[in-house]
Structures are given as C-alpha cells and as structure tokens.
Length: 268
Image 1 (cartoon, rainbow, N blue to C red):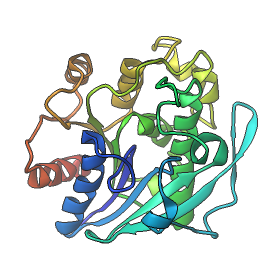
Image 2: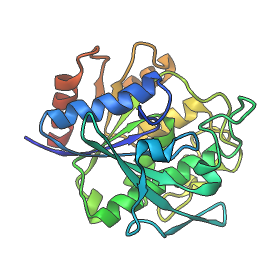
Image 3: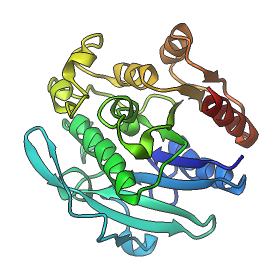
Image 4: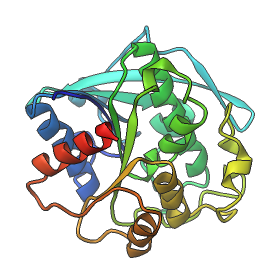
C-alpha cells in the first residue's frame, strides 16, 4: 500500500559533493517514490550550495518563523528545488548564522564547527515545524545522517501531540562516522523544547559525540537500518541489545527491503 514518507537528509547530491551519505540522500527517496509512494525530502541549505545552479527559491508562506536556540532568536527560511532527473522535490532549511554563511560540517580549517549541536537542533525543529505548516502527515519519517539524529527525540516528546505526527513511525539509518568532535557541553540544555526535557538525557554522556548522538537516535526510533557496510559496530550492537527492529545491510538493491521494513513498522 502506498505510504507518505518524509526523508530528512544530511546531504543530497547534486546539491553537495558526492559522499556515501549524499548518494543515499538522493537514491533512497528516488527509489521509494518510484515504488508509488508520496514523499517529501528535507536537508540543510549548506553554504556551499549554488542556489542559482540548483534553482532554489524561497517559499514565502513557510518562511518567517523564529526558533529560539540557546536563548537567541534565529529566523527560519525555507527554500525548495526539484532534482530534475528524478522529479524529487527537496526542501531546504536555511538560516544565515547556521547555514548560508558557513561551510558544511567543517570550517575553513577542517575542524568541526563548535556549535554543530545548535545547528542540528535548529535543523530538526525547522523541519518538523515546516511539515506541520504543510499539514502533511507522514506514515514514516526516515532520518539519514547525524544532523537528523534529534528528530526521533522531538517526535516522541515535543511533537507527539501534533496531529501531523500522531501515527508516524520514525526510522534511523546508520552510516559510517562523520562527526569528529563532540557537540559541546551546552547541547543538553539547548535541546530543551516543550516536553523534550534535558532530564531525558541523563543516561548519556555530557559531551555528546557521534556515538552518544547515535544512541539517542536509536532509543527514540521505531526502526533502524544498517545503511552501509561499515557502520559503527558499537551502535549496531546498541540497537540489537535494545531490541530495536533492525534491517541489516540489504546491499545495493535496497528498494524492496526498505519497503518491507516500512510496512512492518506501520503494522506494529
């Protein structure tokens, strides 16, 4: 049966350089759409994205909201474009401070940005607020990349009463490590929003690194996908130990396996 599936991607070609994550950011929505499903795709509007070449344009009716992160107002700007070859529409979460005037995950010196924690929180809340505005209720939300790792927490706490997400199942794909530093000591307090309380994060280390972020995503997800051959072994074991429904790496031809996994989760 056809489903509504929201993909929240850290990277997507052709808008950013080709990586395993960026390739899957394009391929997975394309394949799932070709299977007859209705999809939406979101990603950050990284500063290295060429808006003219990618034909991005602002969606005025969705922009204009301010999100408070770390006691500071940050304007939320929504842009949209279509990957011509696949007819997949991509929404971009934009903000001058966090995205447009920056590189991607690393600064000019090749170091992780010290406020990557705030950036991922802004991205997550920006996506969920925009989907709410669209009044589009997804059956599945599929997160690809650590930038979307706080989405499951927010869905199960701060946004659990929202009609758009009442019956939504959330899936997290595990990839290889792509975060070198931790997210800073203030990450737990910055994440607070409505029912997403810092107290829920007591079990995790104070300095959130790639592994802690992965554990958070796993704990609040309904299903986990081993998305490539070299995922973090500790996170894979964590998912198994916590009895999370797990799709082991299905190989290059993943479409039917993903579809069956979505169906399994929707029936639970």
